[in-house]
Amino acid sequence: MRLNPAMAATEPPPVMEARRWIADATFPVDRPLLNLSQAAPTDPPPAPLLQAIADIVLTDPSAHLYGAVLGYDPLRARIADTWSTAYGGNVHRDQVAVTSGCNQAFAAAVATLAGAGDNVILPTPWYFNHKMWLDLGGVATRPLETGSDLLPDPEAAAALIDDRTRAIVLVTPNNPGGVEYPAALVAAFRDLARTRGLALVVDETYRDFHSREGAPHDLFADPEWDDTLIQLYSFSKAYRLTGHRVGAICAAPARLAQVEKWLDTVAICPNGIGQRAALWGMEHLGDWLAGERQEILARRAAMEDGFAALPDWRLLGCGAYFAYVAHPFDLPSDAVARRLVERASVLTLPGTMFGPSHADGGSGRAEATLRIAFANADRDGIGILFDRLAQVTRDGL
Image (cartoon, rainbow, N blue to C red; front, side, top):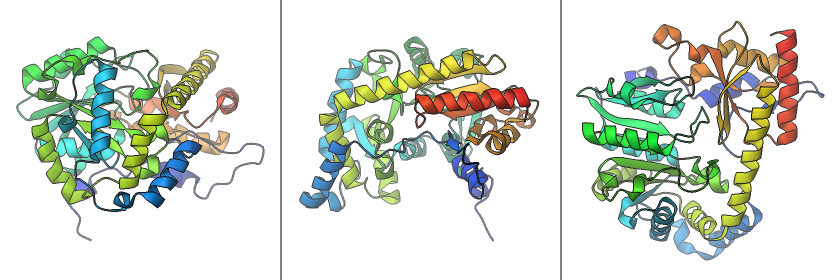
């Protein structure tokens, strides 16, 4: 079978790989599986949004047709207005495009920035789909090792830049690390990128679950923000629209003209029903989303308390949907993750899915860490998680 060499060399999707670990597994009745592997809500949208979607399906014929490649104009305008208010800046409709999920927003952005032989800087641990897309396109990844606090260092990033570097990518709140990048740190990366003629791609998929009040950064307050910044967003997490695939990209109009070429050849236009559902959510679900944020913050606190009572485990980062932890076992994280399925009925993802292994030049952190996605575990489920982790820590894997 002939394959594109770049595709053949790309690692398989990690979540699908983890699902194969449990595909044929059976779990004791008194110890059902805790699936903490995927960072996406499994509940359906709230009832009012479900009703709105039904009404859209039945009453809006245009929702079933091809739409504008860069997205539904009322949604683009609403995003621009909301972002301008939320970030204390100026975002215009022609600086916004709607995409089929945030992964597609990243792919479209990179397609305008880099080609085979170029490179992009990714802090480690990285979001695996970002790395996969770069690999598929023959774009080299420059790993930027983060500190013990999982925060990247602009000076370390500067040392990685060469004449083929095209962008620096930040994810905040971070997937997989959970950490929230301080506004001053994000601004420092903006300044570095601008000085060196690079793009700064900031993925804010989990922005709605940030622990701090107010804007997480002030990049949009810069009148020239779009000469450097490309911001990505997802409606999947905010309104549980994962299956409808609605994301957004904010960038210079000239860049979005190039994005339009790419999107037109990939999906033609975003999902019409999903876009209208996202707009309805923005217009009507502010209080509901605020409640969802408080619930996620309460789960975050429960995770922090739980690891504080397990001194053999070290919590490196916690926020949004994620806890990123150093495990206490004398085994690499991929083996630990598999044994947690067998011994504790807990499915997590190993750090080896989020960064280079020691053999590939990594620091060894990948083998020592696990990502625990707690968005779908209520506080009772989190309590069960810590009971099981305490048992396997005591009894061994």
